[in-house]
Image (cartoon, rainbow, N blue to C red):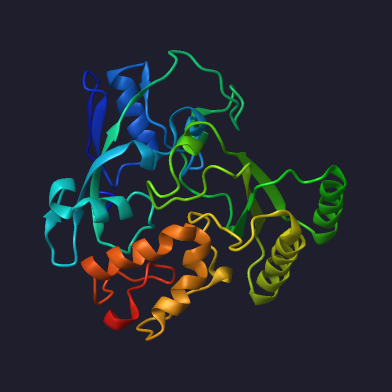
Length: 302
C-alpha cells in the first residue's frame, strides 16, 4: 500500500483526499504547504493526537472514502452505503475490504505552537534521516479505560507493584471535550463520554528467546491483573490499536468465529460490535478478509 500515497489538499474548501499508504508526517507536511492555519486531528502516537479534545478523532472528521470490496469493486461513500461507511471509520483494519483513500475535513489551528520533542535542538539531522534501528526491540502493549478517579492510596500501591514487577510502564491519555460530544454509536469507536482517560501498559525488551518473552509478558500481565478493581467493567474495555491477543483471537476457518470474536469484539467496540458483525456478514459473507482479531460473520454465514 505504500505506493498509494497521493495527498490532495484543497485549502479553500478545507478538505483533502489522502491515500491509505501516506504517512501522517506526509499528510501534515502537505497541509502545511497549502496553509499554516489548517490541520487535521490525527495522531502523534500515531492513532490519536493533541487535537482530540478540540475537534474529536480522525474518524469524526472523515466524510468520504474509497474501498475495494471482496468482489474487486471500487466503491465510494455513495456506492458502498452508510452502513459500510460507518464500519470503516473505526471498525478495525482488514475486515471489510481494502481502503484506498479517505476524504478528510481540515480544521483551524494556530499559526504557531510549542511542543516538547524527544530530540534536542542540537541533534544532527542525520539522526532524523536514519531508518536503521539501533537494536532489535521486542514489546507488548495492553490497555484499559478509567471511568472513576483512582484513590491516591491505590495509585501509590500500584506504583509500588509496578516497581516490584520490573519494566512495565504506564501512559495515561486524557479523554473528554469534543470527542465526548459525539454519540458512542456515531462511529464504531465507543469509548467516549464517561471515560476519564485511557491507560496504555507498555513493556519493551532487547533479549531474544522464549524465556525472555515469558519473563516480560508475565510482568505486564501481572500489572494488568492488579489494575482490575480500578478500570471499566462489563466489559473491561480495550483500545483496538493496541492490538492485544491476550483478550481473545478467532481461529482460521473457525466454525465458532462469532463466539470467539465476541470475546475481544465486546471489549474493543462495546455495544457497536453486533452492528459491525452485521455489516461484515453483508459485505464479506465468506470471511475473506480475516485476521486474528477481525470482525467475524454471523454463525449462519460462517
